[in-house]
Length: 168
Image (cartoon, rainbow, N blue to C red; front, side, top):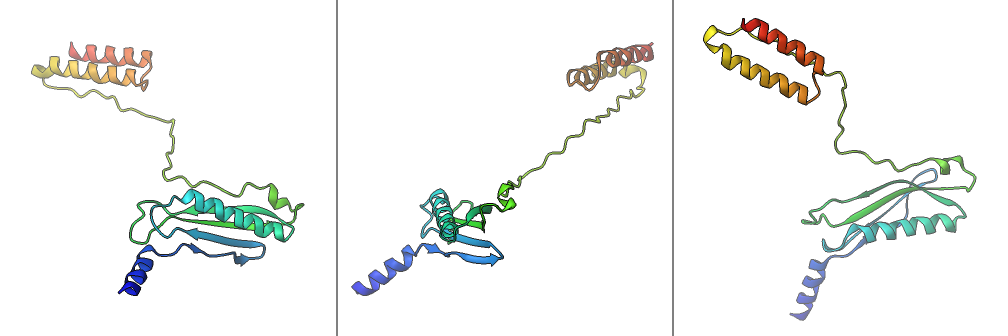
């Protein structure tokens, strides 16, 4: 019974996984580390992977150039335990590729700016009994456009004058 309990405990705890250095191509390699549980942060794993990659390059008399670093995202459940992966190159000290910035952040959201804002501020003609309510609401709309700096002061005054002229 003790043997079954020990085996069950080992199976539940799992094992940390270290890929070791894996060649990807000419001068390119990868190393990854994964925690055995979800209670470990990925920062320590990333540090260990970077140290292992750097030592590997130094042992060859070369310099390490990081290509990319990736980490798993929480929640850490259902075997999605913290993991860090480092892709890197081992290059000669005089290799010009050491001068390049290799790690590039990829944004989750890209917002495009368009400075060409156009506003349609045409005034609809209403029936005579709605003129006063309509005039008030149109003034409110114009004031809002001015407050948001969509209309300049001169444009605001011109539109206000048009509204008043149409009410006569």
